[in-house]
Structures are given as structure tokens and as C-alpha cells.
Length: 254
Ligand code: 13P
Image (tube, rainbow, N blue to C red):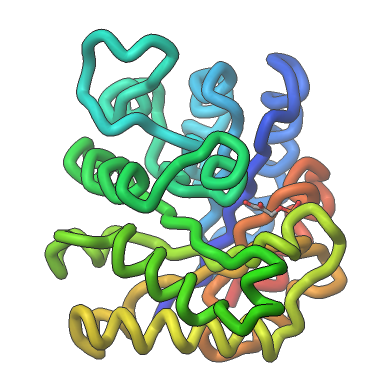
């Protein structure tokens, strides 16, 4: 049985005051559903990680970073290593978010190195994958997602894979208010799980949590969560409003 997982990706939002205020409200709300199975994480900007991690330290809410570099230390101006993220209290790290792929120019090869470095540094990576609108319209969704999984996870042992979460985020659904239908999302989640079973094996593929992301809101999360291969969500905009994020967590908790 896969434990539901809801993570908030705050992207480049909040400030030193509002980041702590937001997470404090989430901690209070989450304490009311403590005892029900759900993993909760928030992913603030790098500069607020430490303050947010301190604010959640006595709670069940975990903290993740939005990115990581694949080297341990040295002359890599502006980058942040897995050890640094661990040091300030991170448990998770998002790797290969579509905004990093398509705005910053990250490649599958870089993302693969980030996943490996994150795992080596004791972090739990959330590998983001998903097709562009044009790719979906050209019937290439399966091909794109397959490439992102195969290259993103290349060289990873079964033991390492068990620490990875996958997030399917169709790019056309991110920040657009245009959510994938539960059926569209389920079809790709199924494909991802079958692919993991082919690369590794079925019992392991059945253990891996696959989150959906892309305009997840309180009013559409329940029908997404009802799909057999959707194990939670990676929430952008709605994770910046404590009440909305808590409603999404509530509907995922079992
Ligand atoms: P939105 O929920 O704002 O569409 O963002 C999704 C996302 O990119 C989460 O990583």
C-alpha cells in the first residue's frame, strides 16, 4: 500500500516573513489530521529553507528544496549541494521540474546526475517529468515520458529507486488552470508504473509513489486521487494558500 504524498512547490514565491507564517499555518492544520496516513512536504526557495525547516521541526511536515547541484562542493558559483540541503534540514529535493527544463535549460543528463547526487547525499528526490502541449498534440506523450524516465533514472539500482518519488506534471497543465482529466493523468501514471516494472520489477514499481502536478486545487484533487495509480500531488499555486493546501492534504489522507 503506497502512502499518499502531498508536496507544495512554492516556486519563486514568499519572503522571509510569509514563508514561516505559511508553514506555521500548515503545521497547525496538519496536526489535526495527524494519525491519518499522508506524507506532507513543503518546498520553499533556497533562502528560506532553514527558517522553514526550523518552523516544522516539531511536526510531521517535511521540507524539500526545489533543485540541487550534482557536485559536492567547489567552484560552482551560485549552486547548492546535497550536503548543504541536508545541513539546513531538507528531506526531499525536486529534480527536473519543467520550469528548470524549459526555462533554465536542464537536460535529462543533468537531471540524472542530480538524482544520483541527491541520493548519495541522503536526500529523497522527486523526479518531475511531463510533456509540452505540442508534444501531447503530436501524440508524443508516451515517447517523451518514457525518455524522461529512462534517462532520468539511468544507472540507478533498485535499492536507490525505492527512495525516489516520480511526479507527472504535464507542462500544459502547470499554472494554467487547465488540469489533466483524471483519465488522462491515470493513463500516463499507468504507463510510468509499467515502465518502472519493465526496467526494475513489478513489486518495486508497485511501491513507487507517482504524484500528479498541474493546477491541482481543492475542487479537483479528490477525483485525481481516486485514480489507482495517482498517489498524491505536487501542488504549485494552491500550496501558497494554507487553507487550499490543507484541503488537498485532507482529501489525500487515508
Ligand atoms: P500549479 O499547481 O501552479 O499548476 O503548479 C504545478 C507545479 O508545477 C508543481 O511543481
